[in-house]
Image (tube, rainbow, N blue to C red; front, side, top):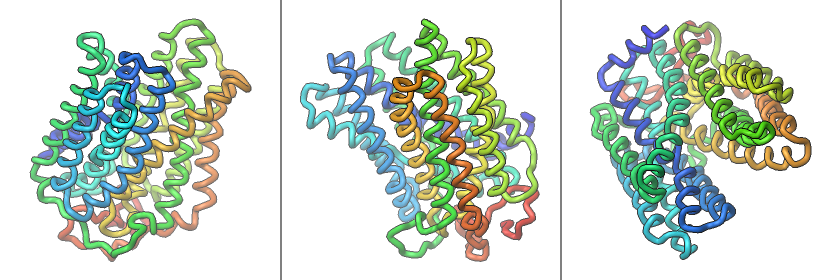
Amino acid sequence: MATGYVDILKAPHAARLLTGTLVGRLPSATGHIAIVMFTRAEGGSYTLAGAFAAVYGVAMAIGQPLLGRAVDLFGQPRVQLPAAVVSALGMVLFAAVGTDALLPAYAAVVIGGFFTPPLEGGLRALWPNVLGGDDRVHRAYAMDAVAQEVMFTAGPLLVTVLVALWSPAAALLVINAIGVCGALSVILSGPSRAWRSAPREAHWLGALRSPGLLALLSAFLFVGMAMGSITVAGIAYADDHGRESIYGWLMAALGLGALVGGMAYGAREWAGTPERRLRAIVALLALCYLPLTLTPGVAAMTVLCAVAGVFLAPALACAFVVVDRHAPRGTVTEAFSWLVTTFGVGASLGTAVAGPAVEIGGTPASFGVAGAGGIAALLVLLATRRALADPISPSNATPSTENDRSGAAEPGFSSGHQA
């Protein structure tokens, strides 16, 4: 299983790009946590802390596809590095003004969130030219999904350590300084500097003019909702059992399941179209969320969480390939950024819905939101089969461009859309 991943990391620039992107995304993975801790340390209420974190998340959700479109138009170095620097400066301003002056504080948080560089979409635009064959790109997408789980597990731990060793303000500044260094590592690489988007049709909708992409985004809004609800449901479960540490075990189990599932998915080649496979994976994802509503004892619940996590990374990895196939020519970074935004907005909705669900129906009801999200995602994919069955034609591809993977297919495809 590990041989294929080692082969990818041995490719020129691959390890640097993956590591730099993960490091560069540290602020987006942990910014909301650092903001909450800093606000509380400044004497702000939980309501204010939550408001700052929410504004940061909304600003990031708006900024990602817009910056992704700018990357497609002007290249990675001209957008990614300035955005990373401005975002970090926004957080420096937030740490400097504190939480008493609300208007400057909110403005600083908006700047920090909106200008978060779209490194995630940028990396996926680079993989095809760095790795070459579709089989390696497919495996890289799976590795990318697994790496996300590692980042979202290790990142909060790093913030906690920085707060314990120094202060919440120091944590806020350090994670953003690290993020700029990660972005700089990516942008100074040869593939990033040489990358150019395919020529694109001028259209105000950009990537969103693709019906297939809209269908995928609609489905992953609900996948994100399922994931967001589990965060609140896990806290409620831990409260029911009187130990905060249980929440950490449940989240670790989810991450471990995603790690195993993602590595297993990327270790083999798959026949058939990714759209059909995505429906099967999301169906399994929903099926594995439903038993969480049983809320058994801690040991059994930990196992159920691990099983529930198995199909998340494969769903993301398969979705990346579907984005490739349905993104209009010259919009690949924007399209991937829309997926990031939609998933994040869905997670926020899931968090918002799971809270009242706990109050109304208890912990099982909050886990039921996750199951409902998975089912809703599957229903969207089933209802939009026709739109997803018609990917952008590979005949539009321009061989000299570095991101035009609209006709990309995973190994084994016989759909007639192989690059």
